[in-house]
Structure formats: structure tokens, C-alpha cells
Image 1 (tube, helix red, strand yellow):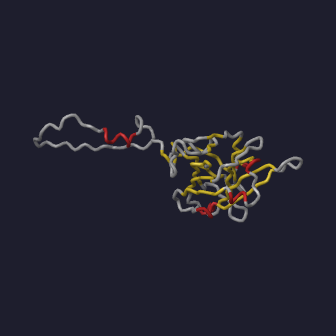
Image 2 (cartoon, helix red, strand yellow):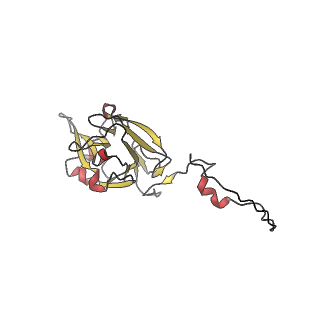
Image 3 (cartoon, one colour):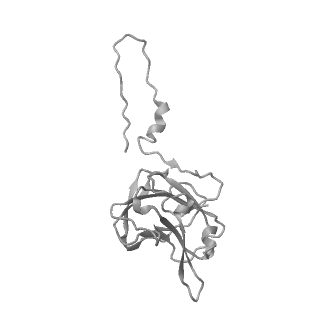
Length: 217
């Protein structure tokens, strides 16, 4: 909680009575009773437009929801805690890395899920860790029976504006960039996973990444 200190200067000189102080114009600094204010995000939701939320990494409005069955953290590669350093809602997710040989985690459905009709994945990231210079974003789909093979398609976050410069970066990733590599939007197993790129360094113990504002429109 960030405290706002109001300094009061007491003057002894004679002056007219100023009346009852009115601080109503400062209400936006405090939110509701001093609670943190919910931020609208880089792309505020407009009622009546289409937006798909998954129930994780996002607190704003949406027209559609596809709740996830699982959130997996691969090989216990990081722990998560809430952070009030955010771009949307009331908090972001802080990923605190454990120094494993690779890192990653993601959102999964138990059964193949149809995501046809959606066009863009949005995600916001922040870190200044040297070992997070390159980050991979992935989606997974299940090939039809009889093979029923879980297949991963990846893109590099760097291609959409990611930099490990300690600033928030909002990435807008066209789903066609996954589809062109073979992703089948009608049989989705994961709409969002994040991890280190296999050709780059992995996160080290003590590295931190903030993750927020994940949705599709």
C-alpha cells in the first residue's frame, strides 16, 4: 500500500476563515477507501466489443470466457506472488525464478477447445534480468485421432516489442503467426504458455518477470 502524506502548513497570520476543506477532487488518488485502484490496461475493454478471457493473468471486462482446467509451472521452475506493479486490474503476477536449467509455465484445457474466430493474443511483460533478453510465447494444439499428439508452436516475444529494460511492454501477437506454423485453432490445448527460448539463456535464481493483461480478441 502506498501512503500519501499530506503536509499541513500552519500560519499564524490573520486571514479569512477558509471554511470546510473539500478534498473531493483528490478522491481518485485514494480509490475506494484507500484501496488500490483498478487500472484499465493499455487496451481498455469497451463493452459491446469482443474479448476472450481465460480466468488468469487478467482482471478486466470481456465478452467471452473460456476458463482453464490447469495452470502448470514446468519443473517447479518459478514461484508466483502477486505484485501491485501492474498495467491492468489490481495486480500482476510476479514470477520468481528458481534457477532451473529451463523455465516455463502455461494455461491448459483438458480437452481440445475451439478458438476459431479470435485473431490476436495480448500480453504485458516487465523485467530487467539479463537472462530474460529472449522469451518464447507458445500455443499448443492436439492433432486429430488416432495420433492425438500434443504439438507446440512458438514465437519469440522479441519480435513483438519485448525488451528486458525494466519497463512494461505490451505485446500484440497475431494468431496467424502461430497458424502459419501449423497451429489448429479448432483443437487448442493451451492458449498461452511462456518460457525461455531453447537457443537462449535460461533465467537464473533471483531473476524476476512480471506478467499481466493476458487475453485474446
